[in-house]
Length: 207
Ligand code: MD3
Ligand code: FE
Picture 1: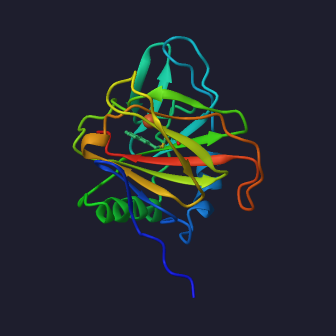
Picture 2 (picture 1 turned 180 degrees about the vertical axis):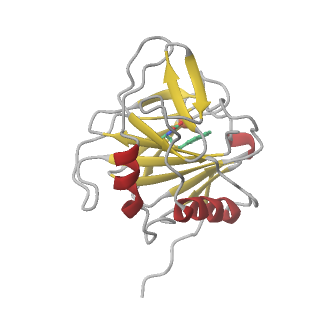
């Protein structure tokens, strides 16, 4: 008999890792139709760099970047139409993870879908385009493992490194909400369900 692992691990005050929380949930069925309606694309930063991570969104609001800046938009700039609706199962997964971590009443209106191929990375940044930092952000890791970098609210502090695996869910709230974070270049590999890629979903209360 295998003993159950610890349900929760506090990475830092306000940051709770729920190891494998999404592993037995069917998150993947909804993914292909969403990405058919709003394809993954490489956004350009205000500084003119093309991001190595490919992104899309679902929900009432979606995160976008271009030469004019970062912001949330109700329409997909590629189609000019609203982003696809957030699947109810995804919203419920995010809300139950937030509740498990002590954040009741989490109602995400935005889900950013990030795709990493081998070599893709995300530089250290803060998420500060949302209107209310008292709401947490919930992230769901799928596919290939990634090394996640988690710093403090000071960019210069050396980040801690955590390996995030398929099905891991992390809730980032309270004092962790404005911490600098990023993802190291993705190592190549093959995941049985997703192949040579990592998908990360981040659920936010943006509006
Ligand atoms: C800590 N995504 O989309 S998820 C992002 O794996 C982003 O794709 C990464 O950073 C990814 O903005 C990391 C984990 C995460 C998300 C938001 C956070 C950690 C966070 C906000 C505050 C602190
Ligand atoms: Fe982020």
